Image (tube, rainbow, N blue to C red; front, top):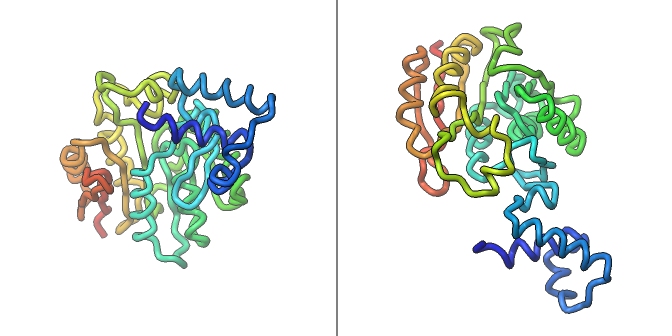
Length: 264
């Protein structure tokens, strides 16, 4: 593994509760026997390709540290683009209604809620276990009263809000079952969050028409897409009756977010 030295340092810091500065200042100190044993066990699991985040229990995303487990997708840096675009579309004082579809750890919903105090944010997931992790993160970030969690498929759980949503945001499953994946992803992250039923665009084919109905006139929808999918996903948005369709690239230059609006 190319990042093995960095991973080993992060595991050391996790075991000892040290900062990077502590490692620099005290790295030559001998480890207590119990700490050395615990570190060796974690290093062995990491060598077996267990994700680092599952060993430390957390992942930084946007401005916060989120608890993660094998029940949820580990937040990725590229997904921060969804949060960035959402905040650009939401005025700081707007009392907007925002729905995060496939919320997982809650990292998108909670990041938006933390930045937009007047917004009503709802996180939806098919997995009850994932929603438990989202609730845990809401408690950790003192955002419990700000976000509502609903279990179900796509926008079905907010049918009571049809035509009233200001923003729908989603990082849906879009990985094709035949795509090569690192063992950390293939063997340890939830298939429900990675692989759509059927072909890679199947969730978008269902989500765009639902969003077109659920949004208020002038409301926006944002979705993350895989590499090479942006053009087809944008075409599906237009076919669903949405307009002002645009794509946005991540820091690697890969078109990563498709944005569309319900006509006014």
